[in-house]
Image (cartoon, rainbow, N blue to C red):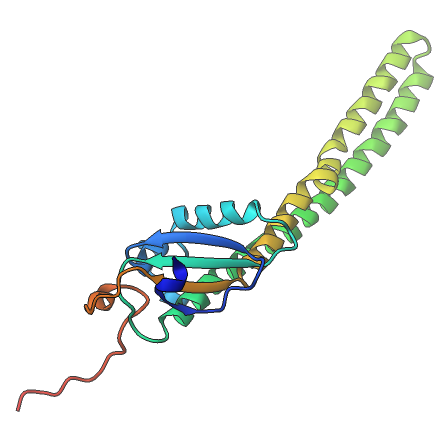
Length: 213
């Protein structure tokens, strides 16, 4: 049981959607290929997919919490805070990226709408000219064909403003929730070892070593 094990970090809110992960070392949660400092490092793709996938199933109005079961003893006292800050910053960057994508999508939508309206207006005008110049069924067919082409030009902007934007906005809101969730570590191994020294981000501050006398 969690209550019988040593733990540290944020208090888990009541009635929250609790995301639970189990790792041998904290560094397994982060992308080993990312050379950024730990506060700017991305999560491991598998860990991020697991956390985001779990949170998508949670009710939209429930708070989120992350419980990390760690198969090593506790390290530095502040390692839970370091882990929380790194995770929060990672999802905050994801939220900013999603909102930037949304702004770019709306910009493309406005440009596409302008192009589509011009094409529609031109197709109507040209269609009327053709119909007046060519009386009979052929003129009607050409006018209707041009009108259909004009409405086809409106397909992309309508798709953007009706369908494409809301999944990106929902994703940004989900990342906002993840960037504010409580993070707590549960140590499943409490033996007195120095295993934390090789882990990340629980790294002992560098101290100047005395020179040989």
